[in-house]
Image 1: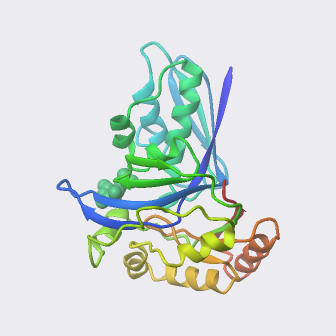
Image 2 (image 1 turned 90 degrees about the vertical axis):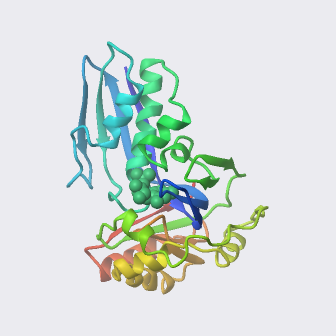
Image 3 (image 1 turned 45 degrees about the vertical axis):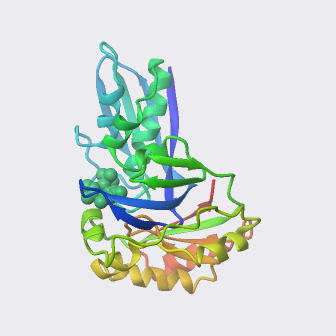
Length: 279
Ligand code: C5P
């Protein structure tokens, strides 16, 4: 028997840094969404645990125990069970769109079904990465704390989305260290229910990603990506997570995200560009 799970890209539509814990981790208030661009995980029964990685973004992805997929599998693995895990990698690594966390979450979902075991608790999920809990159930979430305080939201309005990464890996701790302030205002306490892509975009334009300025300072090419997205006719654009991937939102089903993707690819053949829709 084989079980498959999709590992969608995670997008921080907003990311407000509201404080810092004594252990150094930052408190966040983030509107998180997922899109239909992502990696694919496949698991089948085997005597031992093993990982094979393929796909368009396989370069540089570790296949040893440092890969979050194998770490996640070790957390779940009952004695005497094994699995052959295949990861088809399409998302860039260390890119602010939760690639490793989403892969780990998809692996846990697939293996829990294969081995017929319960999913790990919050502390185990957080120990794999602060974004792993939200990646367990892709959808619209308000994420607070360091990633453990999750409030489900009604589905977001249909939007097309364009993701662009300029090929620089930015270090999350370095970006956090570059924050001008660690205590910024949270999002409004009550979030509206957005009627359409335009309403959501107008609201997002009044929110922030507090990590965007320090990420642009660390890797100025992110500023070029943001300029390209602003010029693409998008309803809204910003950086996701600690970067370097940026996203732009478009009206659904009008092909605008696809044609913006083609324009940006033609001008910047070395950038990673993917168009899809918000899940
Ligand atoms: O959880 P994850 O492994 O993605 O975090 C990478 C690093 O980013 C952490 O070691 C920490 O330095 C920083 N971080 C943080 N506050 C968060 C999440 C991550 O300071 N909420």
